Image (cartoon, rainbow, N blue to C red; front, side, top):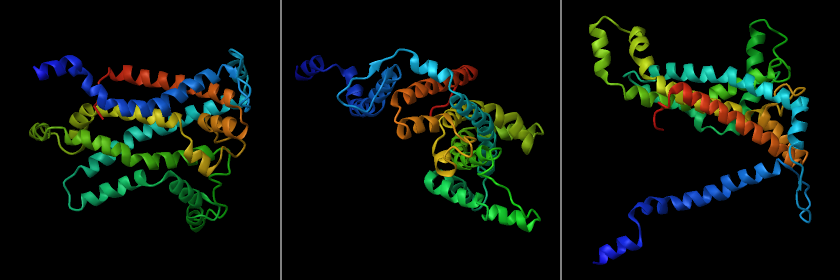
Length: 298
């Protein structure tokens, strides 16, 4: 009788939501509520005066955004970042995962070495790569030994700065996506490779006929994650170039930071952030549609 009465007082189906409640409260306070605030600010004129409420201006911020030459420049840089980084982060980690999935002596150390950049602070990584790219850094010293005495202005050339920052993003993400692929590789039954060997397929032919088709859901997952990461890149740009030279490496998220925290135009920064959110949402939906919703569980 007691148990039955307890069941009537507390629905059994509500128990999982009770465990989720603390996380939902934290997400609501730190993610969802600020996002709604930013959404509302994008339609207002906001001043840093607590005695005045934000004034409703409708679509004025978005009209200004449409005419903003710097915004479209940063948007183009962000799309270039997407095109330059994502294909590499789909293909290179898969190759690394195939290599470190071999049963060789000491292979665990190679896995650790490839994963080390992932656990390295982006601040430390950015400072280290900035030193490598310096005019008297190791890279230019090696080029000087090879006869290129002038060196290469990696971070000070408008034509090279963005590409140089992309290298850091790829280097930092290789190990993370390699682990995702490695989980997928280890889920492939070994019997398939044995059957392929009986049919005469060996070496890279096995990977072409067996591994790559079965890893397609993981490729789409990596594509979604790396696309989102590329579209909201900020730390590398902030640490290494701060958007320079001549705005050549400035991305949309860095432009949001610049408007919000340097120019204190919170309303305009919120409008830019809303546009970026819509772009990320569209890219995510396209990736999900292309994958047919067949993504592996993380």
